[in-house]
Length: 391
Ligand code: GLA
Image (tube, rainbow, N blue to C red):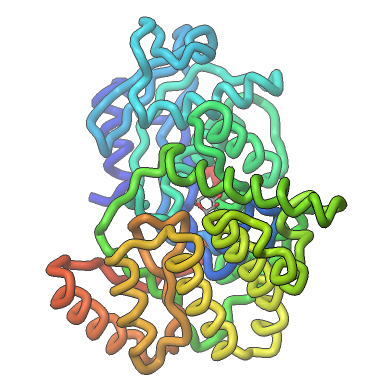
């Protein structure tokens, strides 16, 4: 049974009727510009064909009832219980419930109408895999409440409110990239976003290349911890660099030359983190021109450099990601391979010549398995539209 049929069936079992609506919100993969969104840099994500789906209807009940089909669990919360992060009976929300509850909270902060809903949701974006499963859950519920609330906001605005939910309610200081990609995705297009101005454009996915996602099957947990620490290191770097560069507001404002001149004034770890960001913003800055010129070779080289930098300077990789990216980079037909998303586990993104994809996937799976004993999942992703109401 496909995922939509599953949630419809589950909805009927739970609520005794058909859902009025179905919404879908995709995960994303990011090609270039990693860990730069919260430093005002440029990112190049694309919405993927894996998504969170929610079946929902309005209800007269004073609380919303949500079923997470993937966990076989249920939660219920109301406008009143939201602020204390509890369920309607005052017990704590399950962890997965923080995401939809955070969306409700974020919308309430804007005084937007957030009616009670009955909902069942499920996702084929693997959790903790670097493909933005959280943002896809948030955006799916954004669409649900927008549909029933009688208001409409531009997709970027929905993304910003989802990011606020994740920052202030869930407690992860993420940037805007994931929610943006899930909200604004466009079929067969890469999304080039300036995270400072929030201006963005859709650029065509180069012909003759496929985006291959390779899942190490190692999972991370992106709740605050390491992610927030890395973000704090970037903020500390800005504070220290401001002693010499008083006009900078973020690492976006520091050129590689300036950074090299001042780097020895930073503590070693802060220097490494900031160097990754400054150089990665430089790399992602070149993306558009390279794509326009059809120079996939050079673009792929930047992806490889990005991986090395995430591994050695930003230190968010893990042995399995390094093995996966290393093998891929050595296979004929692979332009570039690197970890995608926050890191600490999850997936690599690979840009591969279309006619080589089959061989590439087979060799990669086989060598990865023989080196790690893990059985990876490797697939071509098609680039999809952003969050939408299907019915
Ligand atoms: C996570 C965050 C994003 C971004 C990436 C790293 O996916 O949610 O905002 O910072 O990590 O690029």
